Length: 92
Image (cartoon, rainbow, N blue to C red):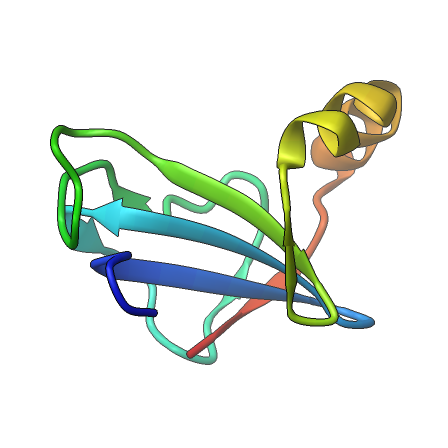
């Protein structure tokens, strides 16, 4: 993904992906199974970034969405499921 630098994309199934970009170091590899407690990367400023930060987005069927409305609207769901663990798989 041009300009995103080191990037991790997690495939949650059904066309939903989360993206973590501008990492200083990617920890997980393609095909790894991850849980909410898995450290996937270290924050950095790779790609076209002006300082250390995390670029986080949600993609549904390839279209990028701001994650904040999803997280706010489903706060209780995320909190309960994260305690149980929501699996995902790292894609390219």
